[in-house]
Length: 255
Image 1 (cartoon, rainbow, N blue to C red):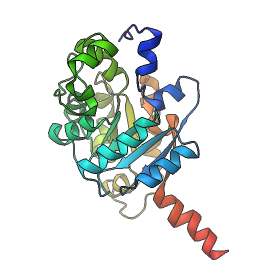
Image 2: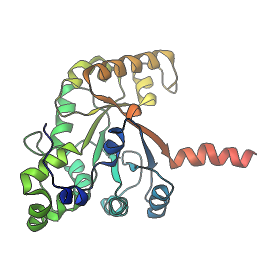
Image 3: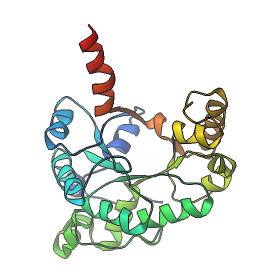
């Protein structure tokens, strides 16, 4: 898709996807992940140099108001927020996107149809079927601002699609077997893994480091790279609040 032509003033006003912006320099983005809402941690993470914030909405505890406030803080610093959604329904995804989320990880994508529905929910027509809302994700449907900043809704939709990461989480035997079809979906940015559920689906519950699971994941990632789509770990270094507490803080206590 051709990029929307922008004047210098137009570029300054945009909140470009901060992960993709870092990737364009040939580097990985540093992303801080939360499983619970904390505006203080969002601000502190950005203060020390993280490039983006990620919310685990599938296993975390976020209301739509929480997502809205986190996007408000992060976007105010020019940083994007991405999220793994609780489920892949267009309704749920749209609630997140309306808040200003600029990247969606769809859990349990097992087929081409699942991947297509994910893309359709995340991207505006004519790359998808995303519904137009009235929140931050569409500049509050402010016609005046949209004309001034984007020269109209069509340009805004194009810009939004260009700045949206659509990531399929491959975490089952079925997904692994269907990976070629999944990767054929236009508009899908790439994939990420889920070692615990993947191992369980292969018959090895509780063994995420099982060699067979690792081999399946390697094959999926190799195929993804060959198609030109991204493997999430290739574009982001992610540190979660749980990593800090269960590893770093534990190391501190033990010492």
